[in-house]
Length: 134
Image (tube, rainbow, N blue to C red; front, top):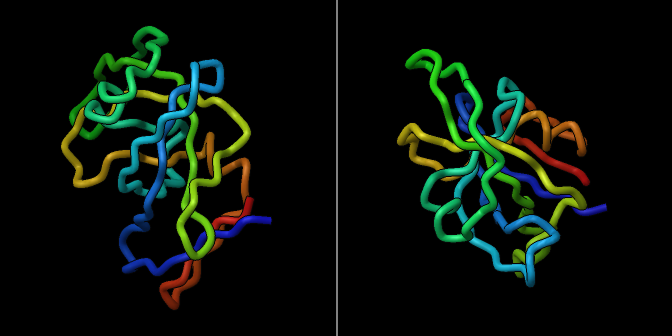
């Protein structure tokens, strides 16, 4: 079972992530980025730059509540992977996700929400350690 782990600073958990077009797309092309692990997010979010580079297929718009209030955001289908092993090879989750566009400048490219976290075992400790097991 693949495991990724790291250290958190007590305020946020950041990790490397790979975004790819959905499995039905011809060939798999990845775009690497920094992700925030967010147990308070129902769905995952992908930044505009990654969505544009990968030409992620749009799935319409939906209303999302943000810190700035309700906003209409684009939805995309995508695959998500995490670096595993000494070489940091992408481990792709066996699912396509429909997530929303990350429209706020945050310092990270992806928010990993409960749609992804519910497919793995997530743990963190007060000592600064976290892990995801798939």
